[in-house]
Image 1 (cartoon, helix red, strand yellow):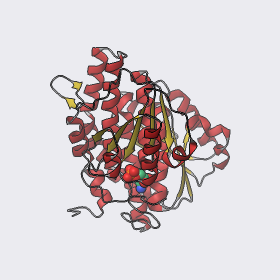
Image 2 (spheres, rainbow, N blue to C red):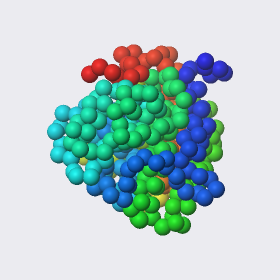
Image 3 (cartoon, protein in one colour):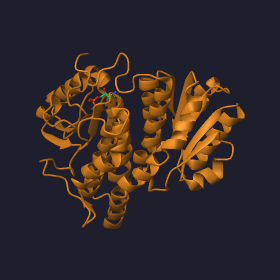
Image 4 (cartoon, rainbow, N blue to C red):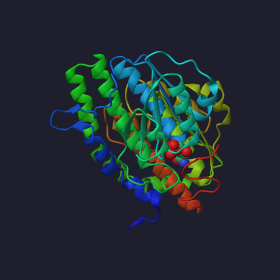
Length: 364
Ligand code: M6R
């Protein structure tokens, strides 16, 4: 049941510190501070390329994993939406790994993408929340998220547990490929181990976010911006809002603004910006300035340093704890979920069962 919560989605958002912790502890040994994957029978030192394919929110998890595999493991990765990949007839390399991400394990496009990769001789690894699913059955090896059943149609805890396991997989791959030293591995593992506590801190902003949602519910369009591994979080924020509040929303890489979408900006378009302090911050801050100069109302999600540098002109700020950039996508997802949730509740939509949508898309 929903217990003390009004909706399953809300319950599932608040379960995240616990289920991220569960998923983490099944792969990361807190004593040694190192990732210990189960024996998957895959030699991660010898993969030419990982091809990730998935749908919807699971696809965004794959996009973030690409940043991690490339940066930490120096592993070439390609990511594609399963409904495209399955028909694209992409050539696939020798010694390639196909990685399929799916909460339900039953999404037909993801299953067909898997079958294509198998025909092309790829080793098949899947990451599912339901281990007795078609995608798991047809894989050579399976990793499981320990999110527990996800009832809300909008994916929340499945996504953050997917990110958790993918982060562990990127660390294991980095070690296998010799692209990370022990000190850096320990630091990144430590950052991951602290995520459940940091996520719990972010959930404390629930009331602030509900107030921001009261502003957002009147909007016709909302833009979400991010850079680097937070670009897919902008995509996820926009999908979540569309899906349950029926407000039109788009996620963009912040640097793409001036290539078109900035033409949309006026006083009526809220712009949600995910921008922790760090090497890319000044770039995003410049994009924020351009938006504000055109009357845009910015909701800045950053840490204390970022807010000190760029928060003054924002209409709203949400201050998240400072964390290693590696784990930032995990934290910045939470305000996206809560903004969408509260906006939908205020609009009175059916949050757990939005119109036209099914939890698992098993027919094309
Ligand atoms: O079960 P799956 O992870 O394969 O589902 C993929 C998508 O259908 C799913 O993530 C969908 O986009 C969600 N409703 C998003 O909240």
